[in-house]
Length: 252
Image (cartoon, rainbow, N blue to C red; front, top):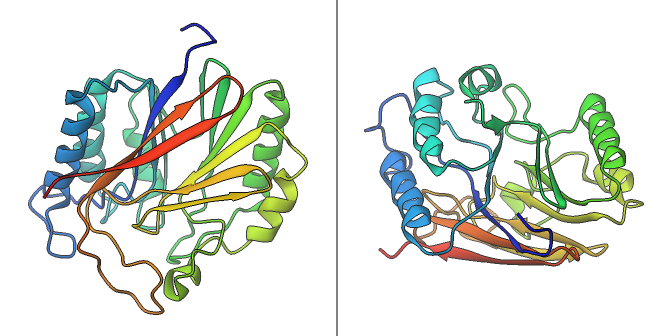
């Protein structure tokens, strides 16, 4: 790929797959909606150079659920970054990862994609422990001449939805204090919130992507399901560090 070309990425998240492809997630078949999203990605003329997957691949943590997910990924034949969420079994996720999928790092041309693990056992909220923060610092400094995208499951910012803000990233301030001096960090992408979110903080684009299955209503004090369909995000990255992005909703 010529370095002057734009890089195209797809971001999917929160598939909530189970051991059985027939098991429902909040009254919707998540495997069917996941296949619908992947089919849309494959059939359009907008061909991605890479894929980022930000957690809750599984709803039950089973080996079978990860195989159900990754067997469908393989046909894309592009670099994939896939990180765990609070519903995932990290050990099973890592065990099932095919060779072309990393849970930590992918590099495409002038862009570096760093995966962070914010998951905690038996806790729906996220936390970046000292090892994760130290590894992040090392990777940023190793790639100081490239544009950097950080990917994590839990939202590192408040999204004006009280119930899910209470189970976001616990140490948001520590995270942003660590990264604020690095001017080559261009974007942060996350899942967990099952809704679209776009913002900018310290000249860093902040993007939350809807689920490939059920969505949550934004701006609510208490949990409430939305009627919006499954979705994914398209991302275009320019060599100068510019990010253009939009959410693609499935037609239902």
